[in-house]
Amino acid sequence: MVVLEQNFSAMQKTKMSYEFFGKEMTSNSIITYTKTNAQVSYDLNKMKIEVDSINKRLIITELPDAQIRITPSVEIQSLDDSFFNRISEKDIKNVTQKAKQTAINSVDQNKLRNEGRTQLMENLNNIFVLAKALNYTIEDKTGKIGILGL
Image 1 (tube, rainbow, N blue to C red):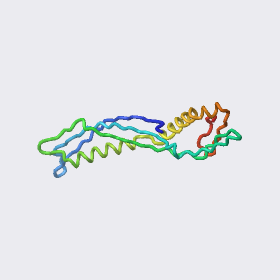
Image 2 (cartoon, rainbow, N blue to C red; image 1 turned 180 degrees about the vertical axis):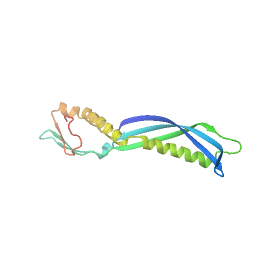
Image 3 (spheres, one colour; image 1 turned 90 degrees about the horizontal axis):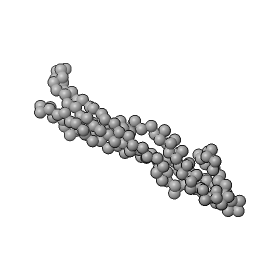
Image 4 (cartoon, rainbow, N blue to C red; image 1 turned 60 degrees about the vertical axis):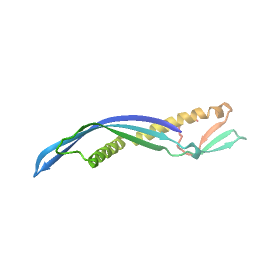
């Protein structure tokens, strides 16, 4: 279950200078636009619940950990290339790889995980409405759910 999805974007300019005997001869630049999608999901198949129908209790014994997926995509917006000093395919790959890594590093995974956990708890609260309507109490044995009033 994907509980949270956020999109980010950034522009980045990379300047590449070429020197000859310590003097800059030419410079090229690449401007990239990076779109990043970050998702927090939980595999609810790994969630373990025990049902005590005699005492009308739903006992949550295991809750899966959050899975964070960060997917950056990089587009080259501008390529300032000179006739004498061509930008190589290797340079372009390095710039796009660096832009992707910068995007991944810019995502606050702890904040994303916390916001995802909050949303998961709200979703679980909605899922357990039927159990509450049948006067079942919901117990958390994981210590992860906490104070949601389940």
